[in-house]
Image 1 (spheres, helix red, strand yellow):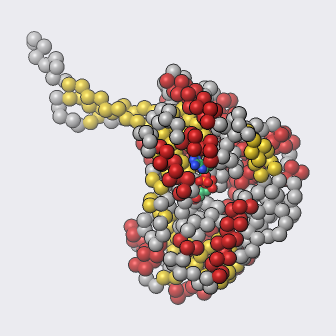
Image 2 (image 1 turned 30 degrees about the horizontal axis):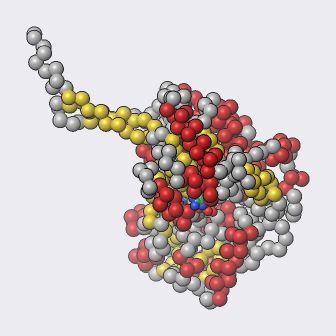
Amino acid sequence: MTITDAREHLDDAARDWLDNVHGTGSGPTFEVLDPGTGRILAELSAATESDVNHAVEAARAAFEDGRWSERDADHREEVLLRLAQLVERDFELLVTIEALDTGKPRAEAWYDIKEVIGVLRYYAGWCTKATGTTIPAPRQYFAVTLRGPVGVCAAITPWNYPLPILMYKLAPALAFGNSFIAKPSELAPLSALHFVRLCAEAGVPDDVVTVLTGAGSTGAALAAHPGLDKIAFTGSTRTGRAIAHAAAERPTRVSLELGGKSPNIVFASADLEAAADGVALGIWTNAGQVCVAGSRLLVERSIHDRFVDLLAERTDAMVLGHSLDPEAQIGPMISAAQRTNAENVVASALDDGAVAVTGGRALAGPGFFLEPTMLTGLATDHPVSQEEIFGPVLVVDTFDTEREAVAKGNATAYGLAAGVWTGRAGQGQRMARGLSSGTVWINAYGVFHPTLPFGGTKASGYGRELGESAVEAYTEITTVVEDLSAGEGDDHD
Ligand code: NAD
């Protein structure tokens, strides 16, 4: 099904929504494109430095006067649960907006918005469960920790999972009483603009959640602002470095969720059909534009040809299409520039002797589509085997022993995620101990859940989101010590 103008396929609610969406800044406008057609979805105003200043001051005032930070925990829980209900009410609209804005098939966006609801409910539960402790200090003293909010938190987020990644930060920040400023990606800011309306409807007070629209300069102004207590960033390693530099000028907490070049490691003992399904899912989901994309396949040498055939069968059968095409399994890349970059990378690999077992070409016609491309014959240290491409490109490499699989698994600058496919008891757990990776999936890939801490090592960043880790990330503890000996001896019994 060829879609050249997504608007013709929208219901009235989604069309009205797009006609009435505005940016939140006073600066020049920028265009938000449908990557499936290259047409403009919306034009939004960008937030300037002065808009950023105003947002931080207002968030600070809201934090200081206690309109949210001093509300009872069970009140915050109620509001978060109401927010989850409102996302459920607007579910179809949010799925459509998210799919159109990112280009991903609607079926994938469906899971993303389900995940948003799950994360809100999970942190609603934490509002009343994050506690301080009583500490066994010397008996003369009574020592406890009090747990409170951090203050004004900012999030700068990427375009590939706009609302879920925002929610990993926003839900725990709200749960524990913080004020929050979001700067979504200029490439896919629309779902955040709807969500901020839902915050108001759910009863989040004014200026407690703010969305600033704009590109890198808006993000840079926010990251450099001295009035923030915390910055949570998800995006490329290059931008992460710039943000960490800006924040180092003052004592602001920073967490960085950055890029990856994650290995999917397949042993000959594995269930190869299941492994081929998992490896395909791990790289072709969201057209490979996933931080945890399993973009390096390490396969035991004895099964290399057979496994590559299994994967090629699955890859060749996949349908590329527009996000609103119900048959689509792989969407476009996010932008013309990103696609050109991926095409150049593939061309350089082919020049250096790689073989494209599948794909390799951009599709003619509207949208920024690139065929899912599987490359064999590249050395482990070739730049294409080392650098994040952030597109539908998989590099295949081999190994002979478990030790070599660990060494090759670790042989990039990144350490975000890894998959291990094995039929031997204990092998996956042994591999997990050797891999420098924030997450290791064994006979599975890409499993996310609100309960599971997520983050990277090495060039993939630091800090963890989700699960109990977010309690530390979005709260501050105060240690309170009282000398109990002061009144000793006053008792005249
Ligand atoms: P990006 O780094 O280009 O942009 C991310 C955000 O940073 C955007 O909001 C952008 O406007 C902003 N930004 C750009 N320059 C800035 C600057 N100088 N100062 C402050 N903010 C700035 O990343 P992207 O292309 O949107 O996303 C893709 C990248 O994100 C990939 O590298 C991917 O691996 C990574 N990612 C990581 C995770 C994770 O959890 N580890 C998840 C998703 C994506």
